[in-house]
Length: 195
Image (cartoon, rainbow, N blue to C red; front, side, top):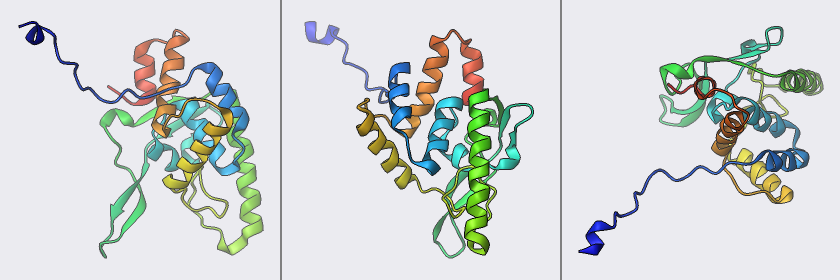
């Protein structure tokens, strides 16, 4: 019958939404939250995964050579008491996830400014500051929780009037814009840590 000849639509993975250059510009102009600006901007500038960004330590940022080395990620693990906690883990998603990413001057400037800001917080807070060595942290040096990051992302999306995307969509946006700029797909793949 005719019905048999019409192929049923494949239910693939949900299409990940991403932004155009214009939407990125609109969004960035509304992104005011100091501590959350850096992780979101890093996702747009590098295509790193959420866990890789919030687990990035200053020791992995090379200002001179303008690179970021992806060697760790923050992930939820169960401790011996059976409680789930955030830990900095050297186990990444795949072998190719371990990579060194070139970053541009704007990203370098943003990171330098952020480091100065973090040093000021450290001085103001004093002995109560949590020394994690993380690039992206709360004002007191603690780990940034994903729920709060989502809130900031969604609130800014609403203000900017751009289409709603997830944090993972920022990674996708980075890749799409690079491809649109004519960057070789193999290079984009390597930046994202794919095979």
